[in-house]
Amino acid sequence: MSAPPTLGARAASGVVILVIRTVLVRAGGLLGLALLARLLTPDDFGTVAFALAASLSAGLLAEAGLGAALIRRREEPSPSELASASALQMALAGAVALLVAAVAAPFGRVGAVTALMVAPLPLLALRSAAMIVLERALDYGPLARVEVAETAAFYGTAIGSVALGAGVWGFAAAAAVRALVGVVTIRRLVPAGRVRPRFDRAEARRLLGFGARFQAVQIVQIGRDQSLNLIVAALAGLSGLGVWTIAMRLLQIPFVLFSSLWRVSFPAAARLGRGGAEIATLLERGVAVVGLATGVLLVPLVASASALVPLLFGPDWSDAALILPGLCLGLQISGPISVLTAGYLYAQDEAGAVLRSSIVAAIVWSALTAALIGPLGIAAIGLAGLVGALGEAIVLARAATRCCGARLLWPLIGPTLAAVSAALLGRLITDATTLADPLAAPLAAAAALALQLVLARLLAPAAFAESRRAITGLIGRRHRPYPTKEVLGV
Image (cartoon, rainbow, N blue to C red):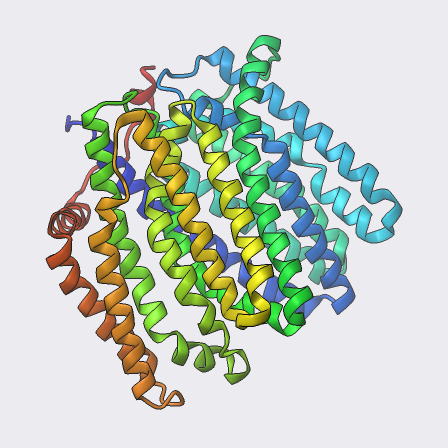
C-alpha cells in the first residue's frame, strides 16, 4: 500500500478541488438564476432574490463558528464532542429560523417566502459532524460532491416547480430539498460523521467561546461591505455604486483562489506546532510562494483593466478600471499574509488578532473612502482599500512574529516588486493601443504576465523554484484520495 500523501500534498490537492467546486457551484447558480429570471415576473424574481440573500445571511449566523472550534484543534474530536456540536448547531439554527420567521411575518408574501427558505436550517445541522471530519482530514473531494449535489438539487427543484406553476413557493420549497439531499449525501459518504445530536453544557460553552470570536470576523467583513456600499451610494450616487460593483465582480476571479486557500489553511494549520523556527520558516516560505501566485492572478487584470472593462461592460463603466490598481496592490500584500496566518493564529487560540486585523481594515477602508471620494473621485475606493489592507497585513504579521518569530513582510518584497513592475508595463501597452481594439486587453495581459514571471525568477528565486516544483508535483502526482479513517485513527 502506498504511503498517505503529505500534509502539503493534501492541502494542494484540496485547493485544486475547491477551485473546481467553486467554479461549478457559481456557474450552476448563475445558470439557474438566469433560467428563473425567464420564468418569473420581475416582482417574483425580486422576491426570491431577497429571500435567497436573507437565507444566506441566516445560514451564516446559524453556523456561529461552532465547527471551527473543533477543526482548529490538534487533537481529534471525540464522537461525544461531535454529537454535542451537532446538537448545539441544531438548537442555534432552530432559534435563527424562528427569529427570521417572527421578523418576516409582517412583510407579507416576501416575509413568508423568506421564512420558508430559512426553515430547513436545523436539518442542515445534521451535516456538521461529517463536515468537521472531512475538513480536519483535508478530504475535500466528498465535500465538493455534496455542495455540487446540493446546488443541482436546489436549482433543479426550483426551476421544475416554477415551470409547473408553483411560482415563488416552489423556489422556497427547493431549500428543503437541498438540505435533505446534502444531509443524506454527506452522511452516506462519511460514516464517522453519523452521530446522534446530544447536548453537553460544558462542551457548548467551550464551542461558543471560540465560535463567537470566529464569527465576529465574518460579521465585521459583512458590515464593512455594506458600509462601503452606503458610503459610495451616498457620496458618488447610484452610478458610482454601479462602477464599484463592476470592480468587485472583476475581483471575484482571484477571490476564487483566495477563498479556497483560506478554507484549506485553517485545518492544515491545526496540525502545525505551537511555534519555533521551523514554523516561522514554513510561514515565510509560504508567504513568498502565495505572493508569487497572487501576482500571476492580479497582474494581467490590472495591466488590461482600462481596455478590458469597456470591452466587457461598455464604455460607461470604464471608471471601474481606476479602482483596481489600489485594491489589487493591497490584495497582493495582505492576501498572502492573511492566507498563511489566519488559520495558524486561529489554531494557536489567537482569534483576537484576526478580529483586530479585520476591524482595522474595515474602519480604515470605510473612513478613507468617505474622506477621499469627494476630491479624488471613484479611484479613492481603491486607494483607501490599499491603506486598509496594509493595516490588516501589519496586524497579522505582528501577531505571527509574536507567536513563532516569523517575519512575513520581507518575503513579499520580491514578488510585490515583480508584480508592480509588470502591471505598470501592461498599463503602458494598453495606453499605447486603441482601447476599442479587442486585442489590447489580451496583449497587455500576456506581456505583463510574461514580465512578471521573469522578474519573479530574478527577485524571488527561491519562491519561483518552489512554485515550479509544487506545480510539477501536483500535475504528476497520482494517488488515491486521502483516507479519512486513517486520519481519524478509526
